[in-house]
Image (cartoon, rainbow, N blue to C red; front, side):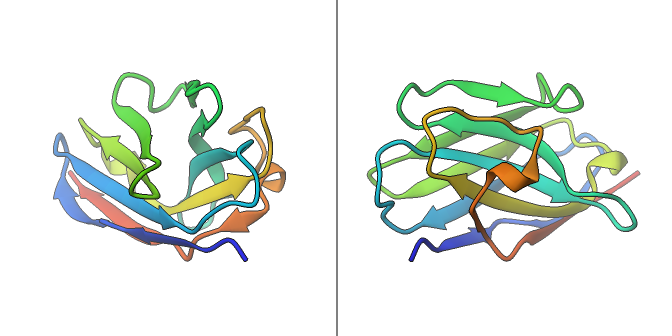
Length: 125
């Protein structure tokens, strides 16, 4: 059973930085897409960034391009999300997710089979 455990959330002022981590267990396949999603109160869960393990290809939602960076350390079984220049509208619960797939998409949460429990990020003005 694949397990995902996020950490690293917290509170920060606008313009600050945070790094989120997601520890993942061994996958039954090398074709894996992992991503970060977020959900603000009263809003739908939205994709933030994805990374395809086979190719290393990354993709980002327009709202975070140039500010967030997704990466992974296969040896440490950890996925990261470096968040810079944070804005109050980035406030949300952030989730890491995984899909046993060669391709990736951040546009659909339904694409992902496995989810972490979430970690809160709060950005104050």
